[in-house]
Image 1: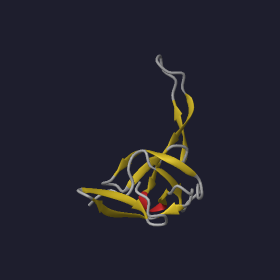
Image 2 (image 1 turned 90 degrees about the vertical axis):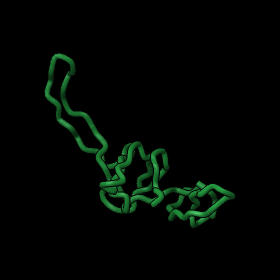
Image 3 (image 1 turned 60 degrees about the horizontal axis):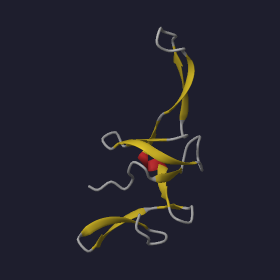
Image 4 (image 1 turned 120 degrees about the vertical axis):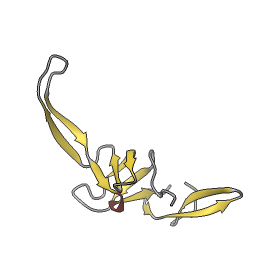
Length: 101
């Protein structure tokens, strides 16, 4: 099955503590159904000081369920993703505007 959301897509969060925030997908795990979005679902990671690193509290983006994300169309609104054939190529398109993504 083709992926509706991919690395580099601009998305908006539909549910959870970061509802309404926008970001870009930095990595995706299709098997787990999760994606890491820059600036979304930030968790504080406490690291111990060592010879190589200072240590302390570092913010880290944690994975978000794919069902809680929607791609952003050219108008800045959340949209669903469809597939169609343009010649020999299968392309994704935004359901709201009909534009290829």
